[in-house]
Amino acid sequence: MSRLNPEGRAAGSGRAVRSRRAVLGVLATVIVLQGGTAACGGPAAEKDTGASWELPRRPDPGVRDAVAGLMDGIGARSSAEEELIRQCMAERGFRYVKAPDDTAPVKMSADYAISPDEAEERGYGLRAQMKSAANAPRDANNDALRALPTSQREKWQNAFSGGREAPMMKVSVPEVGQMQTRDGGCVAKARKQLYGSLEQFLKLVTFQGNFAGQMQQRAARDPRVTALDKRWSTCMKNHGYAGLAGPSKAAVRAGDTYKERGPQAAFTFETAIAGADATCQERLSYAPRRRLVEDLYLTAGMHKYEAEVTAVRELNRDAQERARRVLSGRD
Image (cartoon, rainbow, N blue to C red):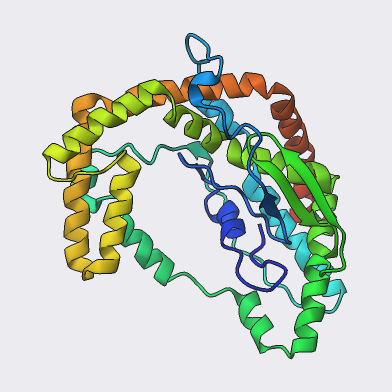
């Protein structure tokens, strides 16, 4: 996905769609797609507890692969979208620099699973992530926009996203809530060309990008997982790390330490708390037990939203063929 929002600032959440598409993480992030897309209100089912869902007795075999498969080909589709935006902007007399290609395969992930060896060597990988972020290339479009006179900057933005005069499209997305985007400019034009319908793009691409995380969030509220977290929390307290509600909170505490200490001291703390986390997880068989509960919710969700899942696959199949033509220069 492209990197600018209508105001010309880097759209952090939208960029995450592209840079994180190789991994479906444990915590859902409501996708704020570039071109002015945003969430308006929470999902209708937000008040539901995980336990309120009717779960199967056992998960479907290969359910994680099936969920990850909803994102198959997103690298090519995103690259094609970038190319279509570039072409459109050029037709309107503006230069647009495409985001780098990212064709890494999609897989399900669990940010709570960590081994003692991983913990000792790299902790949670926070130091490496910070170095990568610090060395990330600057956004050429943002830099170019800042260099333009105000009047030209506004024209660029209007060409890109339609500007404030473009009509706003709103759709309701299961498990996410209401989403909106401007139906104007090169962004909307590219998505219509690629997906056939801006409305279907907004609904189904948002659904597929959030589905795994939303199911994992539901699983996190399941009594079996909350009981497991309590046992993990007690174990961590016995290792000197009190007040942590679950493994993700240990990583957060490690990250906060980088704001308070020098990088080496913070890394020492990170590997220490990660080591305790890994030890407690191993003792409790935390990861496999939690994955089993998550797989039950993933299975239930895939059945509950069978119509949406089928629509996602059909939308992606057709868009994939269009993307091939775009990237081969035939469109």
